[in-house]
Image (tube, rainbow, N blue to C red):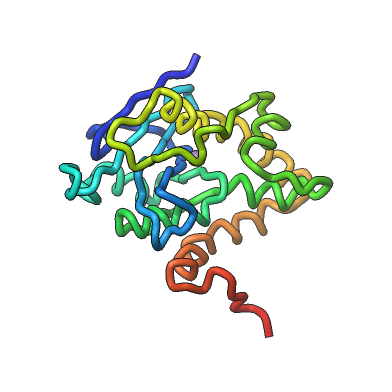
Length: 209
Ligand code: MN
C-alpha cells in the first residue's frame, strides 16, 4: 500500500529520505529551457511518495525558494536515483538553479545491460523488473494547474515508487556483466550533459570529429 504526501513549495524540514532517494519531475513540457518545473517527486523506497509542488511567485507561490529540497538535491552524501536523469537534472537546474548530484539513472543502466531489447522506458522496466504495471495516461496532462487531480498525484507518485526495486535488479545485472564502473562514469557525467542541453548543445556530439 503506497502513500502520497503533497507539499506546497518545499519538503518539510528534518525529513530524512535515506542515502538513495528516487526523484522525478513533472514540467510544462519536454524542453527544460522553455517549460517550467511544476512538481518534484521523491521517495526513500519505503512506499511513500513526497510530492513538492513548485508554484511561481506570479501565482502566489514561492518559486525556487525551497531550501530543504535544494539541500537534498545537492547533498553529496545522498544519491539521487532517476529514470532518464538527463532531463530531470536540466529541469531542476533551470527551475531551481541547483546542480543535482550525485545521481544514478535506471535508463542508462538498462541500456548498458538489457542489450537484448530496445525497450528502456520506465513502464517497460516497471513491468519487466518490478512486476508492476504503471499507467502513463497522465503524462501529458497540465502540471501547471494549481490544484492537481487525484489521477495526476497518483501518476506522479508511481514514477518514483518503484525505482529502488528496479535499481536493485539493474545493479545486480551491471555487476554480472562487469559494467558497473562504466555506468558510474556515465552517471558522473550527467550533470555536464544536462548543462550542455541547457546551453543548446542537446543534439550536438562534442566527441564527434
Ligand atoms: Mn514523471
